Image (cartoon, rainbow, N blue to C red):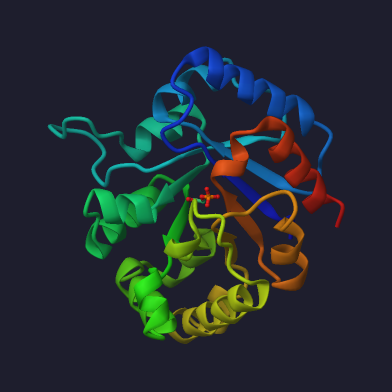
Length: 254
Ligand code: PGA
């Protein structure tokens, strides 16, 4: 399985010129890389420009940073899975902790979004993770299990292979305090065991579990080779083209 490297640009790159510059440098820098799958998730508004005309390359692919659970209607400000699919987007980040914390996105909302995204044959990157306080209280595994159970409630067993799970400890996001590789490995093993219990070992064995939280070009290898993660979700380090290209190169060196 090729490692999956997802760049989450968040609400950065405030002009189209900046977005195009970053995209072009990254696309150019990774164009010969075949043994990693790279996905760029720009703000919605820049997706339209970056995908038009659709770049004729395997890497990078595109993802949305969120989407709504309804297809269309009176939902001011929302973007639907069909709109993303129509543009040529392949992945969608769902349930990022910044949305859960700042916009009160609940597990129930995340569940509706995951179902909608799967219905439109997009691949959700389902974010889960504990806060600093929950970690200190020793509740990490309990929190993760509850987010998985509620987030994946009612999703058919055969769909589960299309979901990417992103383990992103909230305390590690944007803080420079990255999680130790063996801590990430312990959590990812628990996730895999729990998925196997709910969906059966056969349905859950190929599911990708990636790590996110202060990943950079220096520590990325430890998550892939030491912690056995199937990829990474990168915020800050994806905004610097040189750093992000090095990160992708370091992963693809094997
Ligand atoms: P970070 O963000 O790499 O800046 O910690 C990761 C994320 O929020 O997905």
